[in-house]
Length: 290
Ligand SMILES: *[C@@H]1O[C@H](CO)[C@@H](O)[C@H](O)[C@H]1NC(C)=O
Ligand SMILES: *[C@@H]1O[C@H](CO)[C@@H](O)[C@H](O)[C@H]1NC(C)=O
Image (cartoon, rainbow, N blue to C red; front, side, top):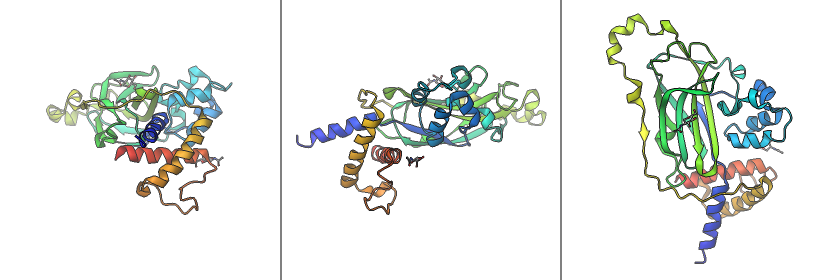
């Protein structure tokens, strides 16, 4: 029984750690000054320093800021990231095109996820999700390869709804329900208007796949052990994380951690809580993923 209490303590720390994720390919919307003007400077700098963060975290920052304009920020769409900051980053797709996605999940937490075409004017999903997961980034099993490396098929029934840059995004949406954290990444794209179904290819249209058949629904039995969590005070958490990171580093072979030249053996300055937190999350991600 001696080892039981530390194990429990460790498990409860895991449950306090934020999940973390972002789409790395295709290049997704980034935070910028238009976002700052709508969502507030602090919310922008929060995302500048950690675009893997969640919407609830942004809202926590926003709650004390006078320059947060909820309607303009529209934070549940693309985490408030704006097309105006990303005009030079618009993908041009064809109906029926397969688009490979890469997601970087730095810290898993069991939830649900999907990628959908979203109309930015209304923040409404157009049609059905292109892909969805009933269990995503499970803390129990670790992140599965097909959750971070997959492709979606651009629907062939969008008409001209997504012909203009800024009107539509492919939104990756992950809700880690056990900790109430929502993550989004948006890929701006256009798909040609009424002229987009090229006459030349109509002969081969019989071979084009229906988008419905492309929807991969991964139903994994959910064995996730989910510890109910209370929100930790940031200061308390940073302190806890630091102490634990040190002891974890002492007990766990750090082959998964970045090499370090520092005297402490930790790959960050221990005076920077943000670095400590990032490293600790990465370590947990690796431990849980193994
Ligand atoms: C799919 O994503 C949208 C946001 O793009 C979200 O509103 C919806 O709840 C998600 N559906 C599921 C089943 O996760
Ligand atoms: C801590 O590190 C983060 C990420 O490396 C950096 O953005 C931040 O400015 C640093 N904070 C301090 C106080 O050095």
